[in-house]
Image (cartoon, rainbow, N blue to C red; front, side, top):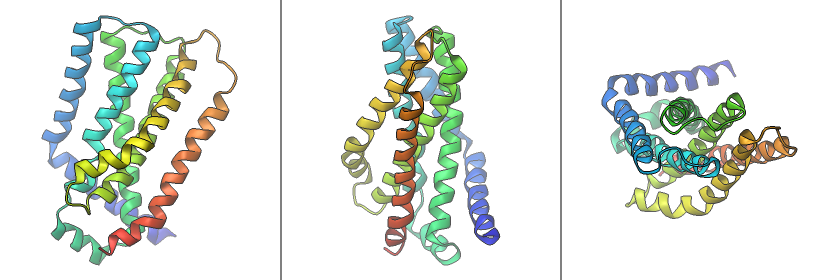
Length: 220
């Protein structure tokens, strides 16, 4: 088990080093977050609670697409062949899932910060919403990491991601909005543990599918 963890951490370190060296992509995402939030501010000012909530999650969705989708699409065939010779598929996919989850937690926090600065802070439970935004960012990253792994083997990866992602991401996004509405109420309503448990169950299903299916994609 220690060897497995070491392999995953090594691959995770590799992704972090690549992100650090290719800083233009990271700052490009930050610019995308800032410009999107600023355009929303110019067009809508400080919207109502429900609109604020919906805009936040839709913005986070597109941030996730731009951030996570490139994790597999940027890996060339030669590089994937090299990884095939030195790492197992389970270690590789788990390192990608962990890295993308950490990256989306960071992006979720930055998005929330800009939203509260420019669009106001209608939240009654800011810490609760921050935790939910990190959990939602992780959930979105897991789905798109799994889809990116599948789409990377296709001729038109962007189109495949859109086709496969639509039926998966819509119910997940609606669930996230419903859970996040609790943070706008004066009193935390009942049903939060059940909804969070449903979301975590969905995440576990994505991880399990990645564990089962990715080794078959790895051989292609």
